[in-house]
Amino acid sequence: MSSEEKTILVARSSMPNFEEYIEEIREIWDSHWLTNMGVKHKELEKELMKYMDVDNVNLFTNGHLALESAIAALDLKGEVITTPFTFASTTHAIVRNGLTPVFCDINPEDYTIDVNKIEELITDKTCAIVPVHVYGNICDFKEIDRIAKKYNLKVIYDAAHAFAIKINGESVSKLGDASMFSFHATKVFNTIEGGAVILKDKNLKQRLDYLKNFGITGPDTIEYIGGNAKMNEFQAAMGICNLKHLDEEIQKRKVVAEEYNRRLKGIEGIKLSNRRINSTENYAYYPVFFDGFKLTRDEVFEKLKEHNIIARKYFYPLINSHECYKSKFDCGSTPIAEKIADGVITLPLYAGLSLEDANRICDIILED
Ligand code: T4K
Image (cartoon, rainbow, N blue to C red; front, side, top):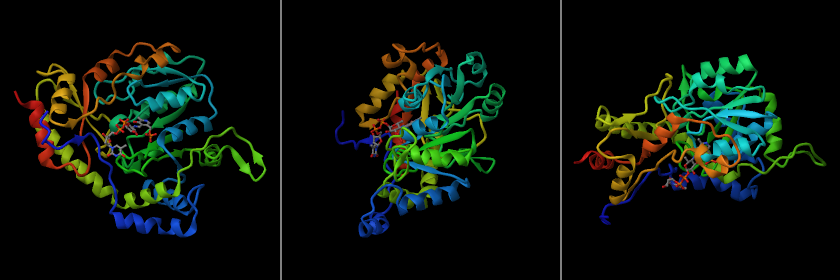
């Protein structure tokens, strides 16, 4: 390892100017109101409703609990068809709601759920589909919608990676019965930790509000067995600041992603993810799939590491290969997802990454 080379991690949190954040939290200091749906929480919900042009936004302390609560709010029972090519959170949220995950393979172009394989997995127990807009690649929502209508299924999108994306000018949050976004520190838009749910039926928002606050419905009443998943005021303040700079942040990521494209497109054995649904991009991740390249994925990963560049194998190992699932459920056969998980790496991508560093990363991957 050449220790003089600076370390580059896969992500780096976007942060506002220090003084800007201090100014935003001054009111919290003065009021001593730190959490439980305070003024900053309300303000951020309002700002996000405007940003996404939706009639409801429900904030959470993290994306995982947002997804878990969204599923709970829909009151489901039985089997849920989902993708194994995702972060553990997606499947955990299904299982922690007492539901059975049924794993559907992915398509090899954009790594989202293979809509041609969903129908064969539907049984009389199927109640929902939980697809993932993985890396910000949007699922084939029209086909998912058609299947959901035909079989009377709910659709909850894990849109953790898809914040700010639009299709034909409309926010991606309008798809399905619910969409969950993650606002974790590593995401395009962060509230330190955080997440949000946008519902198709805004009448369910009240239930989600209760579910994230112990199910308390009044001074002396508890009508739901809810947890505690509220976003606090400091998180919301971070979101208010970061939202002001979001478009600029995405633009900076775009410049880096385009440099990677320029260097890596068309190289034998390297496949870049190929979005199939026409949408705007948020440049959340930069996945590279190695298939027949002179080095294996693991060799590329190690080589980068020797130069203090810490890429990540998102998403390896596949969720349905973990013992906690294999020992409990029929994890099915998902050969394409397996192949992608074995060959994929996500390269460092964040707003402050210089083109010089992006080129150094490409040089290391491509050098003989
Ligand atoms: N669904 C999907 C599809 C998801 O990908 C995720 C989360 C969720 C649901 C659940 O959403 P949340 O509950 O997390 O809101 C990271 C993130 O923690 C996680 O949010 C994300 N997906 C997942 C794909 O990646 P790790 O364990 O790989 O993160 P970590 O700590 O290794 O951080 C990665 C890099 O980010 C670090 O090398 C440096 C940088 N970083 C990290 C932190 C914590 C920063 O710059 N600042 C920071 O504060 O999981």
